[in-house]
Length: 523
Image 1 (cartoon, rainbow, N blue to C red):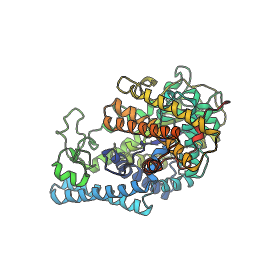
Image 2: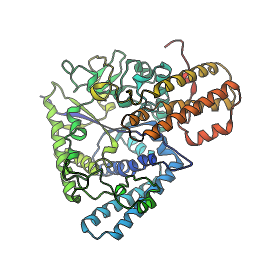
Image 3: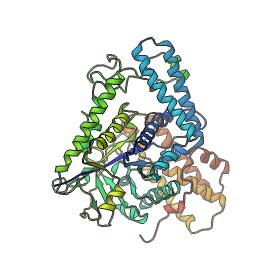
Image 4: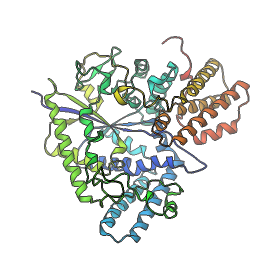
């Protein structure tokens, strides 16, 4: 009889690189909101659990582009300004509200915002440092993604796949001062071509969605190895659907309503003083609960903090029991793997961090058979595994790639492929030549522009018609930047001033080696 369920919880954090020096874009708020509402509360939770002798053994995927935003001094200043403006808005709302129920909500918001400000002051706004600290203490295992989060099967050139994996592995080693063990392939998009470059960089494991295996023959409650000897884990939607499915815990009527925000309701002149935007954008200040998902947004009841947090505690017990039930699903101790976007907890699901903390505390207090474990520890304890080659697949609908390639966004790919081909050509031209510092600098920045253009986020946003104009703007900007550098390199007239301007805005991958993109004669 099985004695335990091995549970790998992967929290995935990614954002496209957004850094604008000359103006404020509303898209910058994606990062600020996630830091204040998810990343800092998550790190605080790890600290509390550790202080009480509880090791959550969570796996955290941090994309390189997100990491560079966490380390960027200019973005750090904007983050602090964002938090201070949120505090001012909350204090303004406290001064005009008389309803005790709303004042209770505002007091919690004020406490959270002040805690976020204290946290960034403690770490000089460097959010990476506490993640590194907790990894070094063995509380979390940090992995990463391909460099700029492209969909690997949609990359035509093998040189591009090589660069996306190799740059990411090198960047991880430079940042975290240790070898990269595992990778979260963007959106679990698997293509057998990637294995050559995983092996090249000694990456031990990756994750796939359950579309990648035949569930009629193969179990998702074990780990596998490909013929190339790389381990992979299969995500379990039967468990994760309770958090990300249509009828998940998040739809409970007592939880806070995410979409009803004072940024959409109060006088725009009043709100814009705090948001610095003439557009109606979310402020994070929300006073209502879901009430009934079928009710219109204007017909919601006031949020009750205590009721919602008690519900989060009971849902965490239910989630723990559902994982425990898998003990009977396999002949030996099963491994259950789930992946959630980190911003679900705290940002999208206000009560989510409390849910997580209750989940770990309940498992410890009740001696539950669920054992929290990271992939590296699991592989160290379980060396034997069946050999299986996953199917071409992704985490999108039915395992296909429609989200990133469809009639709405297919116009971007000819530009991406055309410019990538030109880029590889010019890299091949310079690879075996002695280049001066000016040319090397231009080639490095050219590589950054190509990589940023390949981000899958732009195609996704265009598909959902969300921030579509911004996405097209970014694709066009990186395309034009790269094309100018290519033309300058071909003409032998490099504009150092132009390169310097791009470096100040799009400086990712400090130790970038553009030769990673060169065509290799033997693989």
